Length: 161
Image (cartoon, helix red, strand yellow):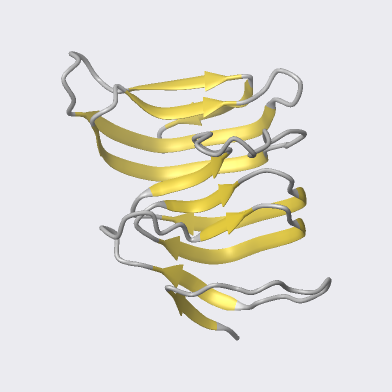
């Protein structure tokens, strides 16, 4: 059984290597502390873990293949992001990515952005079997009205339990 990682990195691993950990943590207010940042990687399996950091839970950057991410609990900050802000000219787009069997459950809090949940999947590879359960994010920004969700090219459902 693995331990927990705090402000650590996993060096290059050989095929078949499998770092085993109970979770990854960093203070919630620590800036730019991604839990896992993946680029130029293949045959990645992340499952049954808790990632609590001050930035992205999992950041999927360019040139990744054959990834399986399941049963990962993220918080207190951002969840799983795909792509980057494009600050570096040499970054490639993230392509040929399939997101399926995604469940977002019991997410609550506040958002300064009116769009509190933003799932934008591609037309060529839409997100499949996405379920939103008990999402309660209060809008506290300058624009009037409640928070909203945007789901583009997503096959799934949303409900309250």
